Amino acid sequence: MRVELVSPEAVLFSGECSQVVTRTVDGDIAFLDQHAAFIGALDVGQTQLWASDGVVTLALNRGFVEVSSNVVTILSDVAYAADEIDVAVAQADLEAAQAALAADGDDDDAKTALAWAQTRLAVAEAA
Image (tube, rainbow, N blue to C red; front, side, top):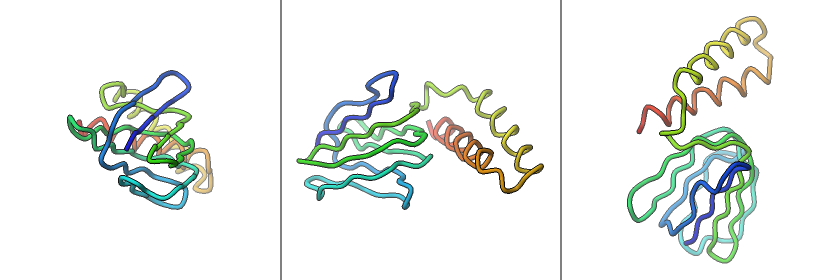
């Protein structure tokens, strides 16, 4: 199936894949060849693309995914490949989010910031 992964800054991936796994607001979902039509909102999380030259793992911060006519299109607000992640910045963001949550455990922005920092660190460490 054809996969297009686009952020506002760039086309991050364009090519053929045998499988795509991404995180929607309803949980993780996998797409295989000839998947039924689908549209969903992305949550903060990892996306994995099984390309011919190996698995590509990216950190995504929200967006949308659409499957139609054997094409998976992922439009992400922010997305980074492992080699684009600044680990020091992600670690600082993690610590700031943890401090914000310690002060107010109901802070939704801090929860999102924590998830985004953890996702970036996990993708960077897996590379």
